[in-house]
Figure 1 (spheres, rainbow, N blue to C red):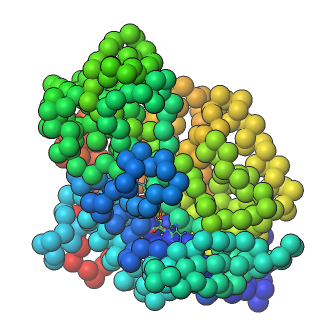
Figure 2 (cartoon, rainbow, N blue to C red):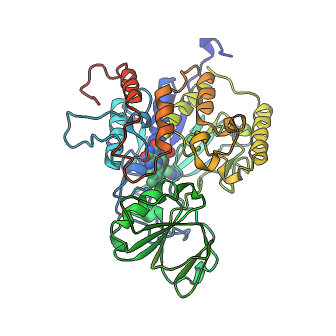
Length: 470
Ligand code: FAD
């Protein structure tokens, strides 16, 4: 139900983080008439895409007192999606032939994504809302039953302060706190270990025998990167759906998961195969982490489920004052940030209503029960994808797959806030892209020319006078 226009209100909103999620959240909030302050602990916009050669002193990032490095981007990283479907809907991620320093490839490098985010921030004058080098260390309701939120922060020069807001939108990213798989014997295994969060270049692995655990996007990229220099790279992966021999790297081998490692440096896989290795690279994903958030137990992270959250965004008991943008992983990220932000902005203004706290809670409980009944582990609560094309979920029947289908999710949110559904070409490009994991998928494609044309026809609506092109 849309209330009459005179009941639409403007709120004072804090956004935590100026990465791809925080930037678009701020734009949508301001478009809806809210006053926005973005807190960003780095010196610039871009979040994860601000590449740094620096890594954390503890390469597994276990030490809770370590100096945290935010980015997990490695030097060779290129996007895992084609640029057309990766961008925000009304600010297309197109090439910039007017600028030779830009990467014109369809799957550009990380610098190009960073430049795109900088362009976005400039175009929509986002920087004027940002307090750079300002870390938020506590977010809490001002008092029991209060609708206001206290945000405490500290600048890089050590000055602390606090401000009171009507709402807080959390966009702090979730690719900084490594998750490690338990490996029997690992405490006394003598080799070098590193989590992908701290991987930047392949040089330290020259001529070594390296085990890479995990074969999602980072595992797939990093194993190939290391294979250019290493003696052998052995991938330990849960699903054999990925186990295709590389056409380029004859030193790249696939195995099932690791059963145990030993003091003599050996690594034994589930099929009994034994390898003596110099290093293990853990590409085992990340944990959600909100060290600043104090909600008296209303929001918790349990086995990587942030909850309870209504549609991955609003905690029923604290909505709409507290919201999260960007929790679902795998899905089309920038598009999702944009559409979730539109929803949050329109709920905060009162233009769109949320169900009652009880109804939202019922929905959350039903969602968790359904995940359980389908055998989807708790830690995959925030997985959204096209299940049909994702090997991990391809066994789900169509009516079951709806639960974790990104398109269903996007279209549901779009309907809530009166926005258009996901474009057909965007959805299909994603479906084609996530199936690809061969060596050359970023440079050789011939299967979606039609979709590219459709995308550029849409883009013409947003960039009619600019020199950007295919
Ligand atoms: P981030 O970019 O991490 O931004 C969060 C921001 O919050 C940071 O700037 C951080 O400094 C700030 N912050 C955190 N805590 C605080 C605090 N307490 N106070 C103040 N500021 C704070 N997605 C794609 O679409 N395509 C890809 O090709 C792709 N490749 C990826 C490759 C890797 C290796 C990884 C890890 C992810 C990749 N992703 C990709 C997903 C990527 O996470 C998203 O694209 C997106 O950039 C994440 O944006 P975000 O704003 O949610 O988080």
